Image (cartoon, rainbow, N blue to C red; front, side, top):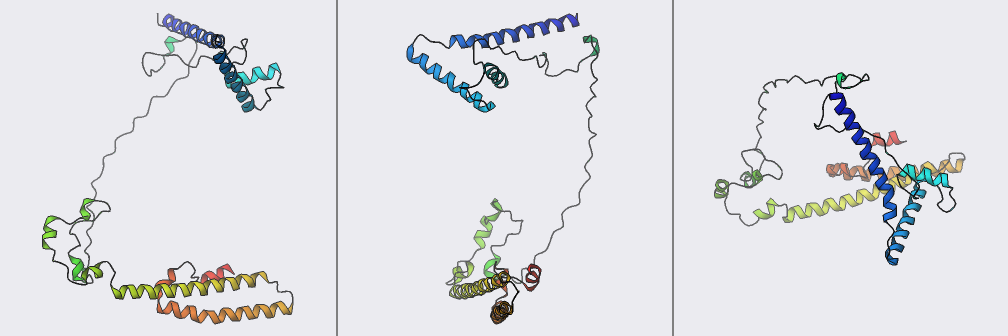
Length: 271
């Protein structure tokens, strides 16, 4: 009984696929409309689709033969003429259940056996030790900023970044000059930043001039004595620039992270 039901379902699916393919072929006849304007639009749309299919397959629609058009229509599943027919193969059987393992008793031919799914064994999670707590030294923090340091962990974008009501109640009113000190906008800080910007500009100019001289040295071939003398003069210029660069870096060590700063080790590796 099971075999008969399977065969009947296969026959129904084959008939259904044949009917659907015949209906698809018959749709080209239904496209013709009695209204002239609609008919012209349908014909132009059909011609555009034909040219698109031919262009995708790499053939010319105007000079292509009947066999090439038929091959292009089969590749793209597009019916160009009324005589074209497309029959798609039966891909799978449709069961009532979403998935069922096939049994050998339901088939006349031998079928490959499917391995059973491997169920992973649940692993018991071992208890992890608590995270170590780190004590922060607040001796170097100014007294004006101690009120803004929370007792709990601080997370970016979280509500813990804001002060609680108790912390707000303990805050003292700011005195004259404290606000500028908190936000680094006092006169002393502004002067420091102006000096730093000026020193950085000078350093970048010196490094840029030094890089141009080194590039010029690499472009000169050492084939004649004249070129060698020219290279020696350029090296003397680099030696004159080096003390100024060293002086700026020694006075302001924070400028060593600038993009134009090149250490001696990196310079030797490049050469």
